[in-house]
Length: 100
Figure 1 (cartoon, one colour):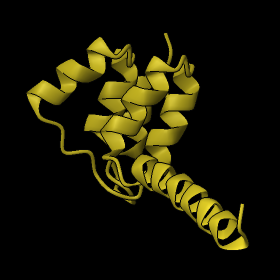
Figure 2: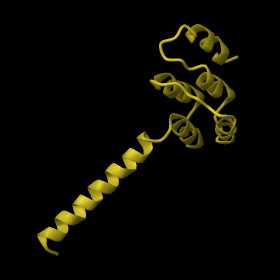
Figure 3: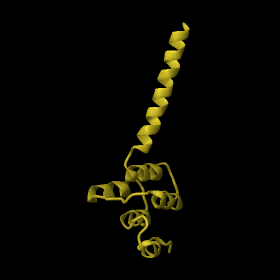
Figure 4: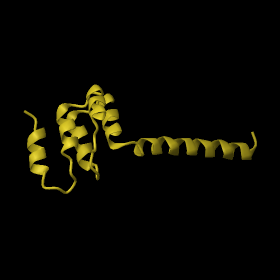
């Protein structure tokens, strides 16, 4: 195999790896939450991921249904609906999503 072919092979591998990473991080935040839930992430991990999101979750009714079907707990969905980074809703949000 020529050195040019080896370089092209590794360049293709690198581009493929970067593409996979970009696909994950460019996904909508609610898609990442659903993916984590399908992967077996516990509720506290989902809540942490939601709290770290810098933007709002503008969920449609269909997206809420999809999250529920993916196994996202109701408390995490409520957390997403009330997530307002830097807002005064944090105490209310914490009370609504507190484990019973």
